[in-house]
Amino acid sequence: MTALLDSLLELIRRTSAEIPDDVQQAILQSLENEKKGTIAESALKIIERNIALAKQKSQPICQDTGSILFYVDAPIGFDQIHFAETAREAVKLATKKGYLRQNSVDSLTGKNDGTNVGPGSPALHFHQHRNSTIEVRLVLKGGGCENVGAQYSLPDEKLHANRDLAGCRTAILDAVMQAQGKGCGPGILGICIGGDRATGYELSKTQFLRRLEDRNPNPELDRLEQDILSTANELGIGPMGFGGKTTLLGVKICAANRVPASFFVSISYMCWAYRRQGIALNPATGTVQSWLY
Image 1 (cartoon, rainbow, N blue to C red):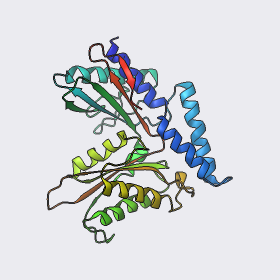
Image 2: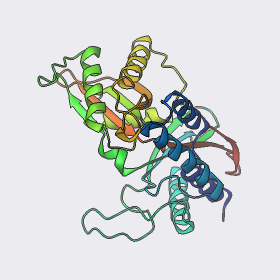
Image 3: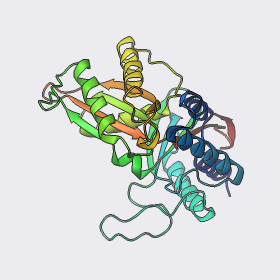
């Protein structure tokens, strides 16, 4: 077994079994904020115990280990083909070891070969940069939260949402209302304003690579993020839709250029089982130099 394969296998294991510290802290803070003796508090306590048991037993936090999304930042000359081959082998091995559920199905035949490897699985996103570092981030995104993602085309007459940030706000809050009781909340939103239909969704998911406590460097988007978060948590939807103060744990927004004829708002929803982890690799050996979250 190569060092790179070992590193990717451990990345998958940790991502599946251990919630990132920033997410756990947000969940614990939400537990403190909920009224004692409510169903919301009970739901968050169950989530807290689930997180602890998964880490202790090195087992998946959720039985739905979801879509496997690799994001790789690498230098010029990096062998993407070798990395992709090794990543697929790591996914197969992780599935065999039980870190991942046998979760990838042929869309035409319905067959599941039990490997989690096939067209589009795992998904690999490579980004080249001008330094020598190699950083690999992994997101495991469950089907329940994926099902409540939404894309709006503005203007939307039904919502009275125009092509401006106020219209974007209306669309995003509508998506939160439509998702209530679904998607295993409290959730996290990744949003892209603009782009085309495909890049909008793709960029919205890159927002899940951000830490929950970070702030958007764009002042307008930062204000919108904070506004959506506070407003959503005043709706009373709460954990799992049971009511309460914690509907969302975070909101992350980016913007992309669009063509004049289109104005899309693409919203990806992440469940409380926010499985995101990353590693910095030694370029020479493929061993883990540090963990990114």
